[in-house]
Length: 180
Image (tube, rainbow, N blue to C red; front, side, top):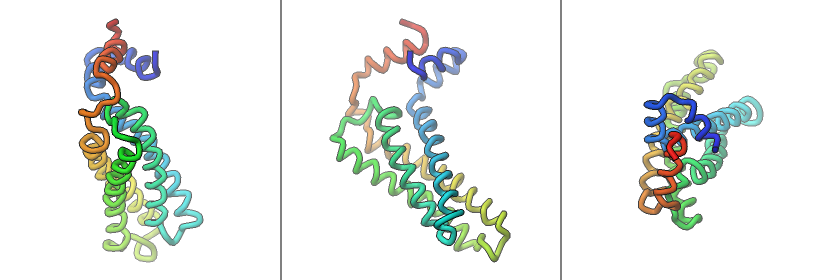
C-alpha cells in the first residue's frame, strides 16, 4: 500500500471519492506546496544575504530552482499517467510554460516595488517585506499556479499521450477505496 493509499484509506468515503476524482489537481497542489517552501526559503535566504539589493533577481533564482524541482515531481508523480512525449520535448515544453509562470510570478512584486514604491526608504522594512511576501509569494504564485496547471495539462502532459494504461489508474483508485 502506497503512502497515498494509506492516507486515503483514513478519509471519509464521500471526501475520498472527491479527492480521487481530482487527484491530479491534489497532487499538483502538494507539489506546489513543496515548491512554495523551496521557493520562499531560497528567496529569503538570497534577499537577506548576497542579493539584498536585488530582491527581484533573488526571486527569479528561487523560482527557477523551485521550477526544476517542480518538473521532476510533476513528471514522476502528479502527471505520471499523462505525457509520453520524448523527455527532451516534454522538458522543453515544461520549462517554456514554467518560464511564462516565472514572468507571471514576477509581475506583482515588480509592481509592488517599482510602481507602488513599496520599498525602503518610502516605507518601513516591515511594510516592504510584507508587500514582497504578499505580492511575490501569494498573488504572483497563485496566478502562476493556475497558468501552469492549465499549460501542463494542455501541452506538456496531454491526456491523449498517457504513459500508463487507464486500467492501471482505475485499479489504483479501487485499491485506495478499498475495493479489490
